[in-house]
Amino acid sequence: MSVVQTLLDAGIPHVVHEHPPIRTEADLHLTGLPFETAVKTLAFELPDGRLALVGVPGPAKVLYGAIAQALGVSRSALRPASEERLAAIGMEPGGVGPICAFDDVVVLVDDCVPGMGAIYCGGGTSTTTVEVDAAAITRVAAHPIVGAIVKP
Figure 1 (spheres, rainbow, N blue to C red):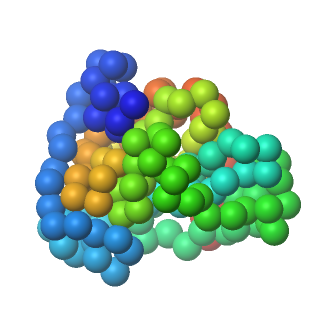
Figure 2 (figure 1 turned 180 degrees about the horizontal axis):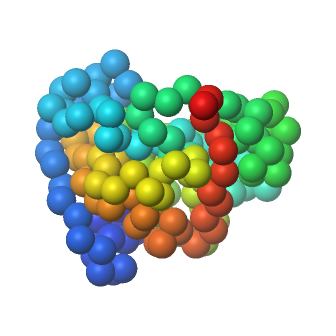
Figure 3 (figure 1 turned 90 degrees about the vertical axis):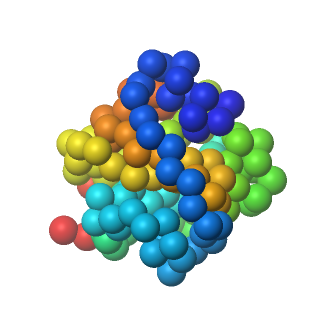
C-alpha cells in the first residue's frame, strides 16, 4: 500500500508535492520545500525480518545508539534497508517516509515529531513529498514507537 493510499484509507488530509527526483539529503533543495519542517526517514532491516522506518526532524543529528535501544536491537544490528525491501512496502530510495501501516514495519519517531504540526516527508517515490500533520505518522503506524533519538 502506498503512502498516499495509507493516508486516504485513514481519512487523513494531506497534500502531495511533485518535484525532480531526489536520492540523498543533498538533493532536497530540488523539492523547493522547507527543510526545517521536514521529517527525514532512515530505513533499517532488523534481525527478526521487520523493517524499521525512523523519522526525525530534517536538520537533526540522529543518535544511532538511541535508535537501536528504542528498537530493542544492538547498534551493530542496524542494517540499511535494501531497495527490494523498500519496494515491498511501496517505497523507493529518495522517497522513503515514515507513513506506513504494514504490520511488519515498526515506525520510530523522535519524541518531538508528533507535535511538529504540518511537516513534509517522503511520499514513497523519489519525485513525491507529502505534506501532512506530523501526528498522522503515529496514528497510521501498526507499531509506532516514540523516543528521544536525536541530539538535543
